[in-house]
Each structure stands twice: as structure tokens, then as C-alpha cells.
Length: 284
Image 1 (cartoon, rainbow, N blue to C red):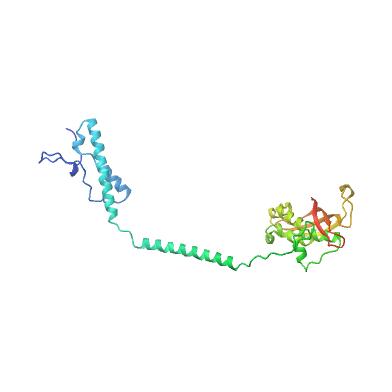
Image 2 (cartoon, rainbow, N blue to C red):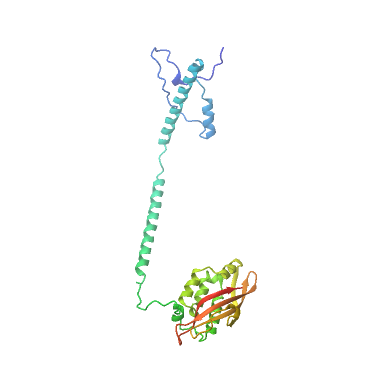
């Protein structure tokens, strides 16, 4: 005699008092599981065994009936879950919080847009100067505008002032090597200043890598270039000078290094101020 399983659910029991066929549509459970944890749900589903009527059917028929029965049970559970979720109202605080957050975002955007517009309105209008653009060999704007810088009157003096300013580096304060270029700008042409700003600087990169706080030239010597360099002879408007700078570095590790620069110093005409127009050579 086959073993009997647990009682068959009520919605699958045949109606023995009537000859009409029984409606196989399952009736959803109205009672929630005792435990609302995932493990409680698994225990409930494992305990949900097949009805005895399905277990006694032939194999193929039993397999089709089992699939239909389990599908009906899943549909019933889904309907029950939806009904339970509808019973839990959305807290009133949720839409209020969403409205407050949306208001804060909109207010911040409005303030930023008005702040930017006020900044644009308060910016002074650009003025166009009638002064013609400086030529390539003209002094830089910093040199012509600065009245406090006393310019040397000789090519050697201009070359020394340029090297002292250009080799003075303060990485933490300067931020980039352009600060050293601007310090040397009063003694250089506009074209040279622009060229130095556009190119990378090896000494600056080494100072940053060494975590140096300052690099100061302690001694600068200016001389005519050696005869082997074969530069053009001096003229009243153009000369070449060789500069040797000894630079002291302070930082994590203090050290000194020497830099050799060959400079072209020229002027527009006799009586005009001298300026460094090119850095022809740069050696250690």
C-alpha cells in the first residue's frame, strides 16, 4: 500500500458531492508564513508537497499535472505577495524628503548661475591700446613697465642680471618654472620670454624630483665665448656672452651644481637698451 503524504490542499481536493468538474484554479493562501525570513519561506515551500491524486497518476500524466499544479501555486503566491504589499502604505516622509532634496538642488543651481552672471557683469571691459605690438627684438612688457628695476647698461651686466634671475628657483612658491622666466623678463626680449614659457625646463624638473625648496645662484661669471665656439664677432648691436653660474640647492638633500649658458645680447640700434634675445647653449 503506497505511503500517504500530507493532506492535499483544499483547492485541489475533488468535489465528491457533485458530478461537475472541479475548477483547477488554485485559491491563494491568505495566511502568511510564520517567519518572514528567507529561510522561513524555503521551509514553507519544501513542506508544500504534491496532492495524493497527482502522485497516483501515471508518470507522463503526473509530470504534466505536477508542472500545472506548481505553476498555479506560484501564481497564487505572487498574487498574495502583491496584495500584502498594497496593504503597506508609503510613509509620508518619503515624498517630503524628495521634495526637500529637489528644492535644495534647484536653489544651489540658481545661486551658482546668478553668481557667475554677477562675476561677468562686474568684470571691467577690455580696452584696446593703440600702441603697436612690440617687435621680436623689443624689450618684454615686464622690462618696459617696471620702473623699479635698474637695468645695467652693458651687455655683460644684462647677461649677468638675466642669469641671476633665471636660475633662481623656489619650487614650493613658484609652482612652475614660468615664475623664474618672469623674473628674468626685464632683461630679455618678448620673443625669448614666450619661447622659454612654452618649453619644458630640465633644471626645474630635477628640483621638483629632489623635493628642493630653493635654488640660488651664489656666483655668476660672464666672459666672451671661447674661440673654439666660433661665434660671430661683437658688433655695436649684437654680442655673445658665456655665463657660468654656480647654484646652491636646499631641500631634503642639499647640493650644488654648475650651469653654463651661452647668451645672445643685442639691441635695436646704438643708444637703445641691451637685452638677452637668445639662449644659444645650455650645458652642465
